[in-house]
Image (cartoon, rainbow, N blue to C red; front, side):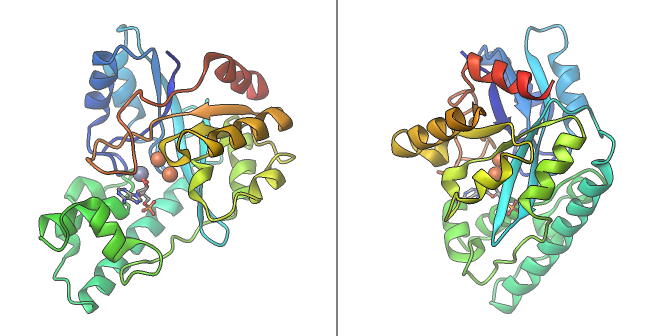
Length: 274
Ligand code: AMP
Ligand code: ZN
Ligand code: FE
Ligand code: FE
């Protein structure tokens, strides 16, 4: 079994603490995971401490928010905690994330949903290092009975075109790739099957893109997987994979360890950037 290179903890919008995520990975006898919280490394030390001496590797990762006509996520691997040049950028993204949640709550209020910021974010989710996201709002919407589950909360209120949709401002994907490479990391385009158009990927190759996330629930298991595997092959990139496990019972993400990176692709990823 390969490494699951896409997982989230409660330091961003996942449900499990970093230690509980590691416990689950150990239960499933996974060889290793990358913790790829959105725009933060805050969960890394706890995850590593929980895994120490227990035969599970925890890779330092991140899912960096960038923006073209819409938000594009770039995964970054092999980064140390708070690598030079990234810390400030990430702190700024997290502040924007927080302000955006405030704006979403305000708009939903204007739309007739009674929701407060305190109902959306617990105190620790407002602390430095924590990364707030739409799933937090979705959970609060469900708790207050405005939707049956998270998928319905996104579909009715949070997706593009819906009353609570607020785009997350960020630098372009090219800048994201450059920043990750400069910090010594290996950038891989997250869940390309998720975007209205994947034409932007080719332009990132000369900038140092190292991978394309080929094995991911959003890519399905047919045409798109073959498409991204072929693109990676053609451009000499690694075809990476991960479950995007968040711990929520939603249709968008998979169980920990059910999508992984083939060993030879992991070796390629290491070779490109190390
Ligand atoms: P944000 O970064 O705040 O825009 O939120 C993006 C997060 O919301 C990602 O982890 C998405 O996978 C997640 N997301 C999008 N749609 C859904 C959905 N229907 N159910 C659960 N999570 C979702
Ligand atoms: Zn997420
Ligand atoms: Fe993502
Ligand atoms: Fe993710």
